[in-house]
Amino acid sequence: MERYAILVAGGQGLRMGGDVPKQFLPLNGKPVLMHTIERFLEVFPDIHIIIVLPQGQHDYWHALCSKHGFADTFQLALGGPSRFHSVLNGLSAIPAEVSEAVVAVHDGVRPFVSKETLVRCYDEAEHNGTAVPVLPVVETIREILPEGGSRTVPRDNYRLVQTPQVFQLNILRQAYEQPFSAHFTDDASVVESLGIPISLVEGNRENIKLTTPADLLLAHGILEAR
Image 1: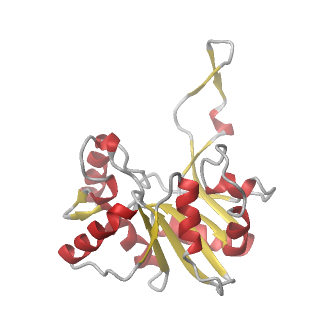
Image 2 (image 1 turned 180 degrees about the horizontal axis):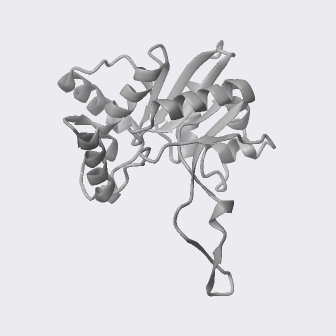
């Protein structure tokens, strides 16, 4: 099967506290999004990558590629008003004649997904249709009760969800034919609404989503440790 990756990078960087969208923030001399792209290419050199960016960021992306001598050969798709619509636009960029493929949807600001996680996700999806990387919860969790107060819940019953979330193309296309719902918080929830079970695979702790300034500091630490 062919492999595709839809990299969703529609953030405005507001929680980072600056004017530069988080996917373009410099990390070890080049934008975060370029690090993410390189992770996929290191593992799957022949993968088809689709980058989903807001319309107003396309020219800026081209300029960054020129500045950093980075290959500007990846297909761009338009970011939408929600993640659901952004993924739908990225999915629509896959040629209609392609039918046998495995497609990952990944946060553009998760540059530290490991080779092992990528291989596990694509292999699981190819054989069983779906794959979502997760991690055990190590913190204590408390549930806020509707009537007020809270209670501890058994953390062994929960998992932290990461990306890439990987699916066979026919499953993902069918899922995204549904109308948008506020209950769709990630791609797995869209697919799951069809009654399709979600296969869970082991993720990696370093596969953090860069959202706050503290995350960026942690990212620099991960790079230094490597």
